[in-house]
Amino acid sequence: MASVTILSIDGGGVRGIIPATILAFLEDELKNLDGPEARIADYFDIIAGTSTGGLISAMLTTPDGDDPEKRKPLFTAQEVVDFYLKESQYIFPKEREAPTKLAAKPLNDEDMSGNISIITLLFQWFSFAVEKLGLPTFLLNYLTRFEKAFLLPKYDGKYLRSKIMGLMGVKQLTDTITNVVIPAYDVLRFQPFVFSSRQAKRDESWNFNLSDACISTSAAPTYLPPHPFTNGLNKFCMVDGGLAANNPTLLAIRDAVVNQKKRVLSPDGSLDFSKFIVLSLGTGASGDKSVDVTDPDDWGILAWLGAPSFSSTPIIDALRSANDEMIDVYMSLVIKALGITPIKNYLRIQYPGLDKNDMAFDESDPKHLQHLKELGKELLNKNVTTMNIDKEEYEPVDGQPMTNAQALKDLAARLSAERKSCQGDAVANLWIKSDDDDDDDDYP
Image (cartoon, rainbow, N blue to C red; front, top):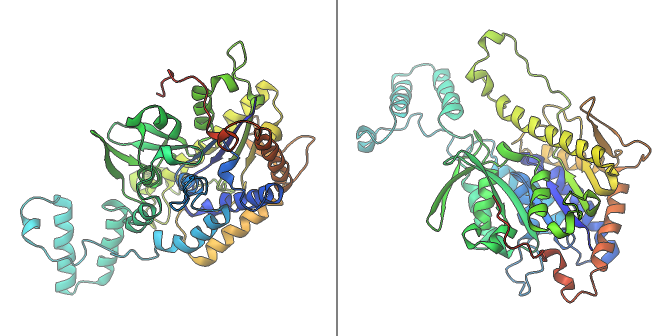
C-alpha cells in the first residue's frame, strides 16, 4: 500500500519566500523525473499550511479555472516565489494607503451620535487641535504611531483580500487538486479551527470557500484585521492560524490518522510512522532569541506590543517561535521513540539562524525580498539538521551528512516512485485523493 505523503509549510509572513524557494527546487527535480507538467500537488496526499504557508498551500492546490479536468494548479512553485517578490510590497506597504484614519479627520454627525468609541472621538478632537492650533507636529506623529499600535491593525488588508478573492473566486475546499489542511483561530468561539478538504467532502457544512480559508489563516493579529464571514447559518470571525499551529505538521498527521486509518495504523491500532513521508518546511528560526528588557518592572502591555518603536510585536513573535520549536521537539520525540530514520520518513528543512532584520514578518522592500530568496537557495546547500531534544537545538543528522538539496533530490525520487507505483490503478491520476472507507469517523 502506498505511503501517506505530507507537505507542511509554516507561517511567517514575507518569509514564505524561503519555503517557496525550496519547493521550486523540489518541483524542478520532479519535472526532471516525470516531465514538465509535474506539479507539487500531484505528489502529496495532504498539503498543510499556516498563515503564509496556508496561502502557499492554496496556490499550489487550487485548480486553474480554465482546466476542465481540474488537474492544473493556479501556480507552479516558482510562480509562488514570483508572487511574493511582486505582491508583498502591496500587501505590506511601507506607508498604508490611509496612514491614519483619525489624525486631522473632521468630525461629522455620525461621530456626534455615539456610534463610535469615546477613544476614537478623543483622538479626533486631539488631532483637530494639533492641526488647527499649530501645536508641535511631533504630537501628531506620536498620535499616529499610537493609533496604529492600539486602535488599528498595522495594515488594512484590503489588497490581500481582493487579491485572494480574485485568485480563488468561488472555489471551495472540495475543489482542491489534493487534500489541504489550513488552521485558523475563531475568536467568536475562542478555539482553533481547521479547514480540511477531506472533512468538506464528508460534510457539506464544512465546505468553505478557499478565499475564506486563506484570508482567515493570514489574519495575523496586530498586522491584519480579523476575517468575519458566514458559511450557511454559521458565523465566524477568524484570525491567524499561527495562534494555534504555526507549524501544522501534527495537524496534517492527525488528518491522515482520522481519515486514512487503514493506511497508517498497524493491526494493533498503533501508528505506523514508517508509512509516512513527511516534508516540513519552516520560514526561518531566529538566531538571536533575546529581547532587550532594560527594566523588567516596566515590562507591561506596551512593551509586549513593541513600544516604543513598534517595529515588532514581541508577544506575537514569542508565540510563533515557541509553537514552531515545540512541534519540532514533539516530532523529534516521536521519531526517536519509534526508531524512525529522520530523513527517510520525516524531513524538516528550517533556516536555523536568521537575524532580527531577516525575521521581520512584513518587511516588503524588494531588496529584502530578494535577500530572502537567496537565503532559501543558501539553505539548499546547508546540511540536513534535526532537533536535539536534550539540547533543544538543531544539529546535523548523525551518520547521514547530506545537504538539503541532496535530501530533496532523494525525496523527489521516492515521490516519483510512489506515484508511478499507482499508475496501474484504475484511478491512477487521482490516487492522492483516494480515501479509506472510514466515512463514519468524525473530525472534531
